[in-house]
Length: 138
Image (cartoon, rainbow, N blue to C red; front, side, top):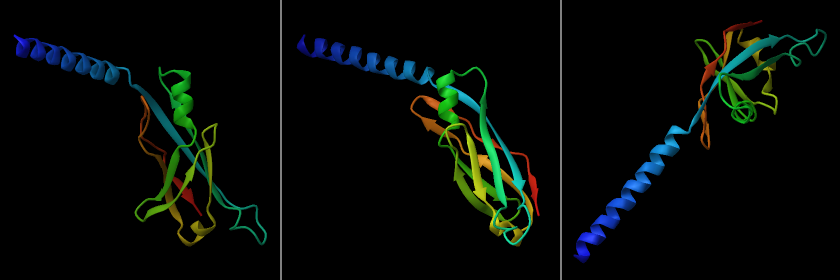
């Protein structure tokens, strides 16, 4: 009889933990993201190439909470990639979702570039991956 009651108690505990885990998985908040990218050339003069930069922002949309959207905008890593050539560099977004990556080396590699914010999990918040439209540099 003791074994049966111990087995029943174990079964109840396993089902309770399984129910909590399933409930926690359902409460994940998925946030849609969007990345914009533009290339700013230097103003001219001697520091023309030094002032060149990739600028952009990570924005969020959808039915997610304000807190979740804010979490998906700030401190997000954005990777700049040249199409057909590979990774150019990366930058982190600020609290408003904006980023700047100096592009003084881009004049050696003219072409089309995209920005990608990878999928990221922050607790129960899931920030979806986003890639910008290609932009022309130099």
